[in-house]
Length: 144
Image 1 (cartoon, rainbow, N blue to C red):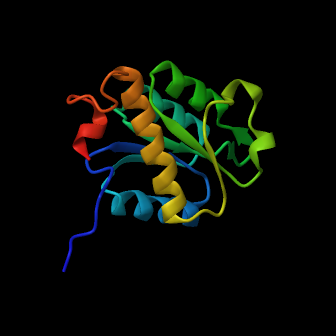
Image 2: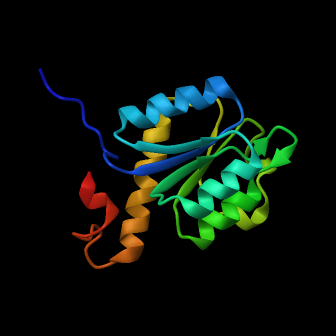
C-alpha cells in the first residue's frame, strides 16, 4: 500500500472564509495536502490580525465575508509576499482589477482544483526567489 503524497507538507496556511461548512471542508482539504492550518478567520477583523501576525506560507481568501470585503486582507498578504488564492462564489468579476495576477477558484471547487492552484502558486513563488533553478534548495517548495 502506498502512502498518499502530501505536496504541501508543513506549509502554514490561513483560511479566510465566513461559511462554516465551507471553511471546514477547506480545512480538511488543506490538511490532506499536508498543510498546517494556522487560523480560520470568519470575519475581517480576525483575518486582518491573522494576516499581519501569523507566520504564513499560503492562504485561501474568500473575497466576501458576509457584508465585508476581504480585499484589505489580500493587500496585506501581497505586502508580506504571502502567496494566496481567492475562493469565491461571486465569480472572477467580483475581484477588483488590482488582483489580476492572483488566481481564483469558483466555489464549490474540488480538492484537486485547490491542490493544483496552490502547488502552482508556491512553485511560482519559489521560481521568483530563484529563477535559475526553479526550485531553490531553501525554498518552501523544497519541503514537498
